[in-house]
Length: 577
Image (cartoon, rainbow, N blue to C red):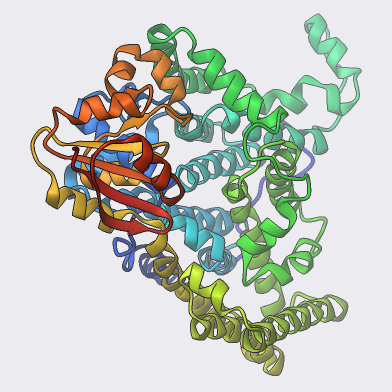
């Protein structure tokens, strides 16, 4: 295929790579693995995914995910499989639960380095990966048990390999790209196909093949017609995206699970595709947010590098590799901005291309590749960063928000240290141009190392770990755990017990329809049914919101004894009449 750009060759002389790789691995191990198992798993997300993985091993059913013994089909199973395998090897620990996310985060660093090294060389590759590693959002999500980090790594791996296959005309990369894309689909669903297709398609649309010469005598009708069309509409422009064998590989990876579940539960397609994909995108039924929601969210995820992003995006605007990275990040952010349902981690795949843009810009500046006007733009960005940090530090120092910090379990000294690092980093870089990268890198690394400290503090009021351990220590044969208009996935995980539930809407509702016999066993129509159930049990533990306690006392005969509290949630034991 003849394209406008020649094949890309390495633009940098050979550089020893092992120090960069070793540095990235060590950085990733510190940022994503150190004290990874210290904070308790938090509800709802971490508790949910840990409990689903536990029930895979409990039920020995690797094909149908279960939550509280009900089928749970909101998401595909790959991350659940990884967590179940981790539990099988390391036991039911917080470290085992979060290890797949941490491994995916480390893999993302190596992917960022490898892609940027292929495009520009080892030094900008290391810088781009360092920026990614020290983005606060990347650190936080790399240390949490969610689907997002694994999904982002696999999706970005697919997109990056596909881009190299197009730009370098290396068809051998397509099976690897589609293999990674298939695993991304098994991580979070077919949204991966849409994002990758939009990114690759928009790149080809903006970079069509040049017009082809007139066909020689004897060529087919299609070729003759194509040769007379504008370059954009010629077959050669889109031919790189047509990969039948890779599509078969993708189908072979993804379809068996979806077909099996659809065969097992014929309502699956309607629930999974129409409700939880089209429904989330088109209706505000799930997590509604305004269209501008991801603007501040993206800046927050990129901290402390956010203020350099506009400068980095406008460096070398004609560089095709930079253009692709902007398309990559832009499609992710715009797509989810158009969705009616939004959550902050959805745009995690955009961090890698933006980090590479930042790393390339920093390498250009350090190497003297920036003209005076662009360097002034860089200094202006640092001044904006420093001013924002000074304002933040002043607000934290002079404002009286101790009650807010105490509710979040964050101390003012900790927040002041974070704000001071954030403020001093650009100031030191402004004072010494020769060591600007050293100060920026060191400051961002210290800032990111402080993130896990805050996460540990935030997890304490949100994790049912201590309550679960207490429940486990008091458990007796034939005891029962009852959720009174409340359900905690994390409490199930830590206690190793399923919930009986008073009639109330939860995320288990779809699974109840699929397993009516289980519903009759685990649900009570009212408090009177709960009282009858408790008569034949040696112990019945009740988990509820504090506001429901007085009403329950009037309806439930017998004595309630307090055991533990987690925020406004209580654990009690019902002792009957």
